Image (cartoon, rainbow, N blue to C red; front, side):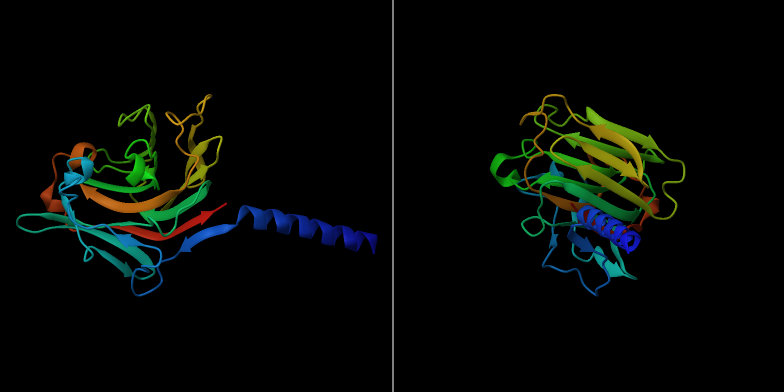
Length: 253
């Protein structure tokens, strides 16, 4: 009887630990017919007049038509007609915002010179304090002009647009199939993983509003830019259409 009670206690302890690890804040597997506007916003246009080129000299025009759900995936498609480039960008701003936790995204990258897909986060106070005071957490950035490289970066007021808090991981087969991109974010550190392998940790010894503006709510952005200061400026027009495919996103604390 004592042995049985001991086993039950162990099961209870491990169950509690697992439950604590998997306190789901948000989970989206994109299995519906349409994007759920309870959680997601479309960002449309080219950023004008307030932020033309989305602040990075990007060349795409964001539309709803370039965002779709298919076979249980979110599909962001980059296209081109005779005059313009088109793509998609969605956010959870004002709908799913959280402080600290783990963000995990399973995604398949597009290929081609000029593409710039990204999984990232911005501080929810961006309208009040602006960028970079709001802080930015780039979970995954990929630029087609440098194949096989994944960028994970933090933007803060002290870096102001310079990617000094960053890691570039070279993975020869990263364009093949789906891969899991993850960040663990706490008051002490922000860690980045690719397929559960730790690739970068950001944890400045002294943390203040200038170098660690990460103690407040953030929201998620999924998009694929074309060209721009990071993705371009040259674009290979022969590559279109290209798809950035997201299987799921999970946020837990």
